[in-house]
Image (cartoon, rainbow, N blue to C red; front, top):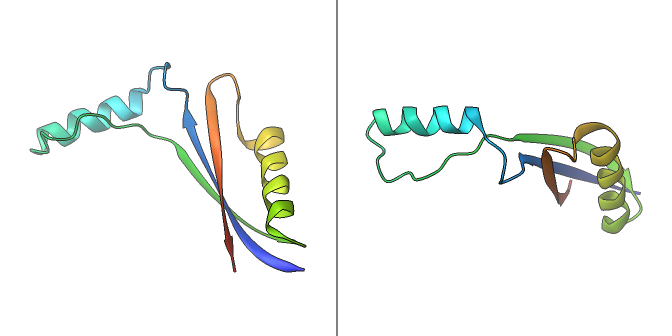
Length: 84
């Protein structure tokens, strides 16, 4: 078995308000970063797991995300796989 580092990126749906992102954008503008036009705040979760191949690692990560980490009503996610 190989060891994989799975990174699950979770973000709120585009159509939903993102108060933390809006607050960050306002703070950036106050600091003089006027060219920043949007800011969204999400989560990044890193898991190290063992699997026979990359597809199996991705499948396991997807099950973890769907069963535990992501609220599909307000969030979406994507998975990044790295070999350790």
